[in-house]
Image 1 (spheres, rainbow, N blue to C red):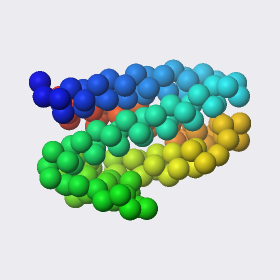
Image 2: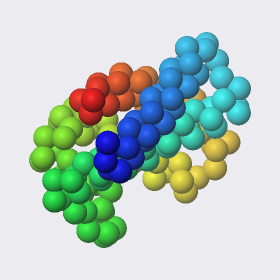
Image 3: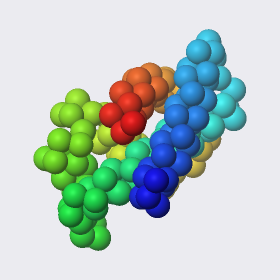
Amino acid sequence: MSAESDYVSSEAANVHRSAKMIEELLAKDALTQYEVIALGKLLQDVYTGLERILRTLCESKGIKAKKTESWHKDLLLAAKEASLITPPQFEAFRNLLLFRHMQIHGYGFMLDEKRLRQLGKPVPTLCRDFLAKLT
């Protein structure tokens, strides 16, 4: 295995583990305030891991994301154009990116459980489907 494939495999394992934890939290009828904060952090972690994988895959295809104010979105667009992600995956990833920006600049105690559940519900399947293409 190359260093690149080791890195992608390691990130994929972390994303899988985080997605499983999201699934476990979403299976609960109600969450404590600390579990809501944990769910927000896990959603942020999943997006960050997926973005790292996409950046590595794009770079392996010679696609470089210039570090501009919109480089995160530009990376998603480049991944979609290179058929690394499907249009529905692009939309789901973009929603996670938007959440991640809000999460980074906010306070955990301000998170809305209902909104997190809506955002988190498709994440485990999204991760499984996307990561299955990597193996």
